[in-house]
Length: 159
Image (cartoon, rainbow, N blue to C red; front, side, top):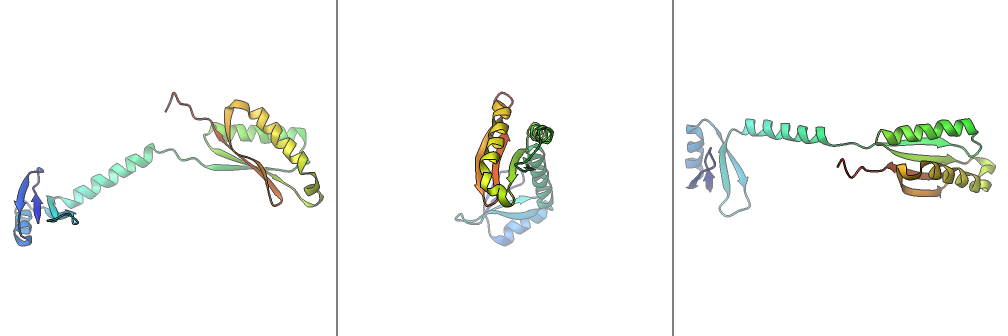
């Protein structure tokens, strides 16, 4: 097997016992880094320290990642004006927090005959939101619910 030393220098092709002996001299571990190559490549390193650094790097990468949640706002076609304003403020708040918003219009009983009322409400929401968001899924009927999904617009200057 090909052995790489502590500083990254090549020690050459050694047998397993010689490589283990070399690692034992420096009180480190012999780690196989490329088992598929011919001959296999092993490195002399402190494996515990390597695992620690790798976990810290992953943790740092996760810290910088932005998680987007899907928030849901549910309403009925017989919604009153004030309730509609409240729901609209909720949608704006969720979009301001960089979350996607699923707007669900729930139809019950005879309301299923008047899906046009629900579509009008969805269109009103869409027009009031204007350029502040992107419509991922246009209003569509899924069983007894009409669903629309919107997400916040990305700032290309900040990315």
